[in-house]
Amino acid sequence: MYVIVVYDTAVERNPKILRTCRQHLHHVQRSVFEGELSEAQLRRFRHAVEAVTDSSYDNILVYTLPPGTNPHRQEWGRPQTAPTDIL
Image (cartoon, rainbow, N blue to C red; front, side):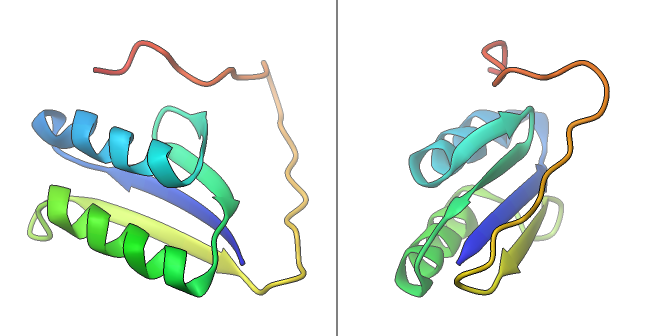
């Protein structure tokens, strides 16, 4: 399935969630990741995310598209490259 992840976490946890997301998905903007994951990979990813975040403060949005469907992404404005300045 195709997965899009957007997160908003406390500053001190940003490096950990960033590293975790990079291990599973493609980095497309500062706190946005996307890519293909199987059901099992999504479960492992969720477990890894929950291990480095605080559910009472952090917010992670996960959008899933059924297998065989691909999103049509439009990029408006200045194209973004994957950020390199995140701590």
